[in-house]
Image 1 (cartoon, rainbow, N blue to C red):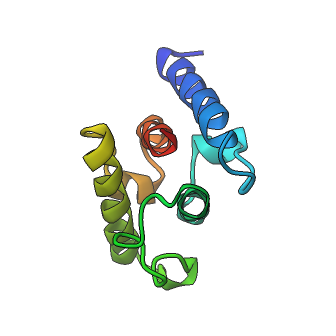
Image 2 (image 1 turned 45 degrees about the horizontal axis):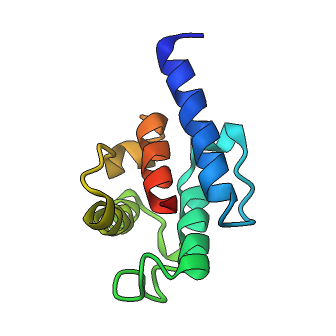
Amino acid sequence: LSMADAALDAAVAETQRLLGAQIQKPKLTEPLLKKPPFRFLHDIISEVHRAKGFPGPDILTEFDLDSNNFKDKDSKVAYLNKVIGAVAAVCGPLSVKPLKIVAGLEPEHTNAFLIALAR
């Protein structure tokens, strides 16, 4: 187990602990959190929005809550930019990059973003 793998395992466990206490779905499985697809992230963000009212309706519109509206890379990146901006405004800067998320890269940063979302 490399340092990066160990760090990712720890981030995934923390995501499961913090977010799992707030939302029932989607199931926060280790394989999905280690390589989170956009739809999975959208479901998490939408569910946190429903549960906590964050990000608020000033950021997430009805359009944003329908994952069918995000088919291409540009629309997914724009959506993630909005949500990451809202989380960063509350929690401080995040080292997550929407293009990397959409490409399935740097899952440790994606998990750090999800942990911040949960807080």
